[in-house]
Length: 76
Image (tube, rainbow, N blue to C red; front, side, top):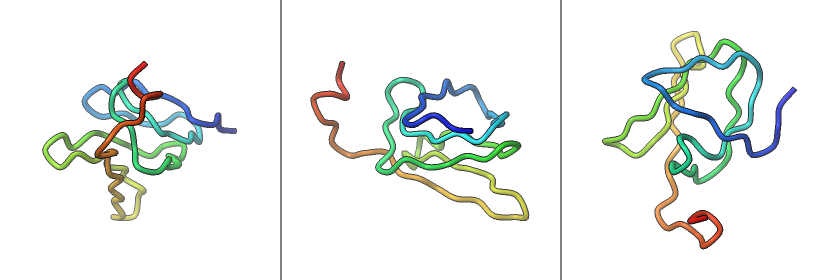
């Protein structure tokens, strides 16, 4: 089960305990497009590249970019 537009608190590296749909990380890192993170998958922010990285398992890593310009609703 997932919740639409879930916010995730980021520590160094996290592991999802259930399937989640993420669009905001650490209350300020807004993704260009929401992404699913499955149960047991690890994720972290690559701050130099401005991306969230998700270890999908089996040697697969996906990267998801941060929005370049934030809309007014993102500043609240």
